[in-house]
Length: 244
Image: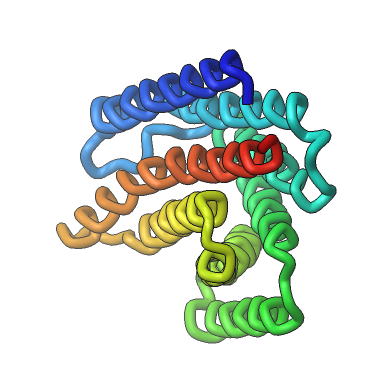
């Protein structure tokens, strides 16, 4: 990478750190005790969160435009995933009543990461079986949660969970910084989505439910922002390896 591109990359990291701190402070200042997340679609907090995703998208598109000619079609799947992530967060942070489409797009994001890691028949079978089991549990054990939104959300959870194991298996097979950063990024991505799941389940009037809700709500973007930075960093490592 050129010196100028390294400087741009460092500026990107600085912006991400600043946005992260501003968002986390704003979450606490805007949160009303006993109420939900203050970052509803279209709110100032949601727009700040969305700006992080826009920043990620612009950075990876810039890098791909500069160095993408080195890459195979397989390698270009990371920028594709970031593009879908931007679209998904448009539904989650900006558009109202677009959450189902957001879940669907995030499932596509995880599907792209699955393809990037070159799935086997075994891993695909595990995903399908796990999804079928979850749907059966929702249908017959927690019927009130068997909604269109939750069906899409569970598809995303399944893809992300299996991706977590595949990413760490890949890391131990190919021992380099790129696979390590990718695995760490997917791990924090899982932390974000499972925090959303716990936050959704933590309903009720008990003080324990409020505590669990507040902790899981705090963890959502605490995990999500670093996860995207780490995934981008894995792409940067790929660029450096290809450029050598």
